[in-house]
Image 1: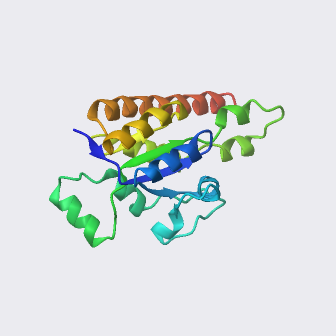
Image 2 (image 1 turned 30 degrees about the horizontal axis):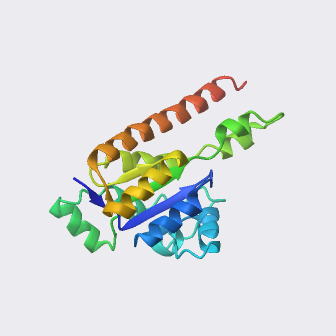
Image 3 (image 1 turned 120 degrees about the vertical axis):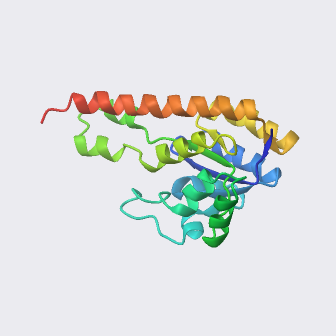
Length: 198
């Protein structure tokens, strides 16, 4: 079963290929939602984009620590589209479905490799909202496409341009890669923190 992509959330630390992906999605009629730096890059390229804060009605706060952790984002990602109760709750709470999540995480690995990196610096590069969105989208792969690797952008954009959606097999493959991505990320943080002297 193909799932039509009508709305995509793009929030990436590694911006490689993100603007080109947004341009392709826009040409395919996909509405784009984005955060801070990613939104600015997409908008600068002339692609219409909705700022996450405009969608949620809530500003990015605490130096960006809290921006996507909101029911209008997670409800849009996690809703079971053929569950009448979920659909009803979406309607009651003004939540629109999000069909694709394109996220990669804060550069923890490159941060901790810097000479003289402080514990505070390392901690600020532990992504919270990113893994939450990735895991939500991967859990709901029956309805949502999750993309964590820029190497997949071209293939996914082409599929959407040709069919308007992403097939089940591809969504499952992407979800599996997404869980591997967050698992590796958590393992890296665990390893780093286990070496921190108290």
